Amino acid sequence: MDKKICIDTDACIAIINKKGLYHNLLTKLLYSRVFISTITLFELFLRTTNIEPVENFIKDLEILDFDSTSARKASEIKKELQSAGKEIEIRDLFIASTAIINNCTLATLNIKDFKNIKDLKLLEF
Image (cartoon, rainbow, N blue to C red; front, side, top):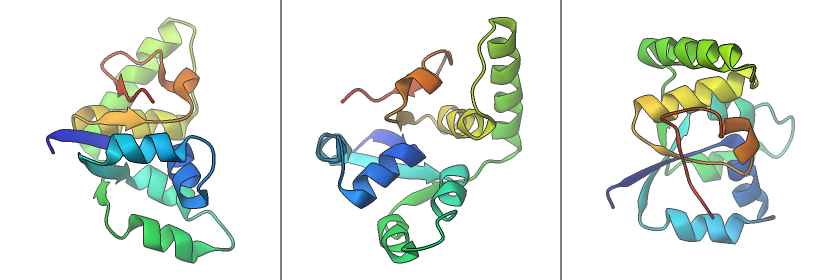
């Protein structure tokens, strides 16, 4: 259980709703230490209804804070992406930097949003 995986919001939603590739994802998470970022937590709680499934989902997960080290890493990544003419949504940038700083592989269904970030390990499933 030495692999650390941070789950992106879209992957969390797939698991919560039992849709799409959620079964493949769950299989990959089975023998890993599983995290979500505070940014993902924020996005999950943007729901206006059905908060209970979110609460049940997160109760056994470890939460990674978007802290000052993550913020510095996010600004570094943003500058690199800008200079390469690539942009991603700011919350995705925060999730990616948190995963990198905490030495986690990121589990996401939106590979295209994260593929240009060097040092970010993406989970394949």
